Length: 419
Image (spheres, rainbow, N blue to C red):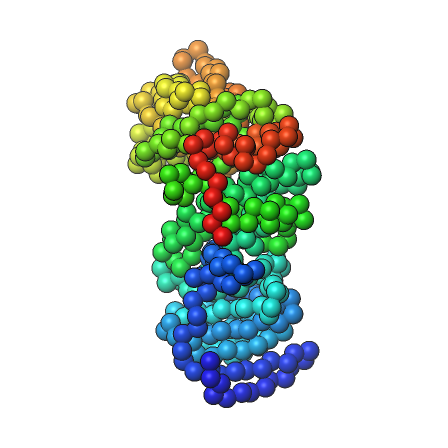
């Protein structure tokens, strides 16, 4: 890229070299990078959004500035940078100073060599891309990172701290997470592929990296799950409560021949999240149900009435509740499949959903036939589709290799080396 001019700005403890470059597009970051003699996929992960973002380099980074989609200038810095939203554009400055660039459509921070960057105090590999969400009028921080490094921040966040005898479970989780990530590339309109939350896969960057996990990632590099030559549709959850479930019994849409119900109690019953209990008084449960039904079905508090019963009307083959009936003095209301977990939010927090739909109900009523309290006694944590993470750990402890673990939870799939 030809250099047109060079300026040097000196501040306290900072040497900032400004390179104003020709207005040409930089190479696309997400088509793949040449890494260890192979082409490796790159993903863009949404970390968060807000009105101001503070980013710092481990050593130094390049700051590539874009205006109307075209590269405008490149800076090199070793200092903290503040990125702010100004009107309907992006600006950035040295911390607590006036903007050096404004009216930008995008800013990319690229750490030098194998370096990393800090965002709100957290450490990340790869590059940071900041774009503007016009609809929400906010800055969006995207971590643009190669897939293998992304997995090093996903697997420990999903599986927690593990021991050497559980590494095969980490390998299985890595293959599942890699397959999921590849299948979701391009799923969002905002210029990113994945969210760093349970909406996709929990991702916490370098702060949660672990040597054992990194070993599992390296030893399964490029390996994915396939079905009939195509990427498998892979899901996983914390604990199945003894039995996983078919995809179409939990969510809408067609089932998959490899996302079926498998018996797992011998492998996951050891975990603390295998069993749970929850109890609501009538007033609390009515609030939870009204909040859910108003959003999903437009039911008002007056239209809901007073709760008389909560009845399991239908179960899936694994025993999970498939149809729940909330009976009131006004009407009967149906709640189906996995949405039941949102309708029956925990008694101490309306923002925490029920662990699973695998439960039994005990209803206590007053002399007038209205609910006094309801107790749910359940098993498992999560939707119950695909791999049970605690079950995978249990299988690894018994000596099962990761290929056997994956075959148990995703029967009929095959492991393929993509790169």
